[in-house]
Amino acid sequence: MMQSEQTRAVTVRKTPKYNVRDVFKLQKTVRGSNDHCSVPLCTGSSRYNSELSFHRFPKHNGIRAQWLHKIRRTGFSVTPHTKVCSRHFTNDLILTTAKGKRSLAASAVPSLFEWNGYTNSKTRVGVWERRTRPTSSPDPVAEETEEEIVEAMVPVPIDHDYGESPTVCVDREQYEKLLDEIEMLRQQVQSLHLQSSFGLQRFASSPEDIRFYTRFLSYEHLMAFWGLISSATVKMVRVTNTRARKTSTTTESPVTRPTKLLPIDELFLFLSYLSTGCTQRELGHRFKIHRATVSRIIVTWANFLYSLLGSVCTWMSPAAVKANLPQDFHGSYSDTHVVLDCTELGCQTPSSLLVHSEVFSHYKSHCTFKAMVGMSPHGALTFVSALFEGSMSDREVFRQSGITSLLTPDMAIMVDKGFLVDDLVPGTVHRPAFLSKRTQMLEVDVLKTQSIARLRVHVERMIRRVKENKLFDSIIPLSISGSINQIFTVACLLTNYQNGPLVKKWMYDV
Image (cartoon, rainbow, N blue to C red):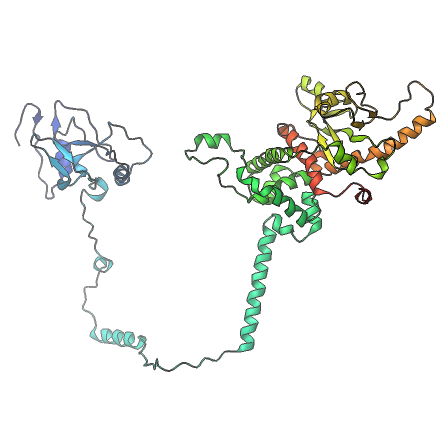
């Protein structure tokens, strides 16, 4: 080996076995680039191995993945300065130009490493060759005995006449018994599957359970309502996880994104949340989904039904009201167009003193949300306002609800004593009389109060229908305050689909 200005030779002691790794390791250069090999257990460097060439990772993703798999190094980022030395490639993959510059073939993949001894040999000594053999000569008698045993163990083939049809004896009675048992087991498996899954199909045959979980009278009524809204569910905009949406690289829209439950089971979950007042964690255990998924389903369906049912005009014209006017309203109150009343929902006490003073109701002595509900004389819900702070008066709720823009001079309203709205209504106001500093009410005022109370009580029965949903009987947590307005409005609008008339005889009066 010749000495030069850049490379100095080092005497290598010859060993019985040639090791190319030692040759590359002991060669040293004085000047040169500062490239290093990125393969584990390899110490190749351009400063000390002038005979080596260093090659960048290929740009093709498939070949780059093969390089990463071969060098057994994961979890690191490949940069333009990450290189692999030529000792890991076979000679046929290294191309040398006329100027002496070395490059790799287009499909070159490293295959020579420390852990395979820098060889591609895949020959492996079999188990039979690796097993040690006794030095003594085998016993010929024992060999004959083993051969006889092996021959005795091999079954002797029997000649068959395949042309003849075999005679099979079947016990018909036993066969039918087995078929009945299979059918019984199939039904048991199907029943266990329905019992293990908490969905609508599990309670389809039980009107009591349907009434308990959905407030609909029967499964048929629920399916009729589903038939009205099912076509619109394909355009439903779903509430998604913001963090997951930021990290996701897919282009799925909220409309086409797959869901954990079927749309009809999501509706069943939302109605169960309203009707039973279960916590979101409990619903997650029942439907076998995560609590966050339950929360997103509830908010999604609250917004969807709020937009869908809210787009249906529930406010009736005077002609429609008069055509369905019950017999009890004929006479002094035949011009009544809507019966109004306010209701309050208890909410969690906020930590802020300012917010606490706004939502605190002196009537309920608790923090509440207040809303106004309107009913036509024949019992259909025609108006529901947004939720307001519990400290508001009935007059202020009436003024901010927006109902004044719907009233005309020929429409009379029937209200309770707290609605001092005569100057806000263009028409007549039917309201019970006040005592007005008198010791005793006049007889005509008593009769008027009794007649109005007898008719106005039905709006309270309608509110009771809304509050049959156990969610509103309990304290509303502040965690759902962002969607409680939509949830309450949907619960009010659903009463027109879930229940029959308030008074049965009104069906025959109209």
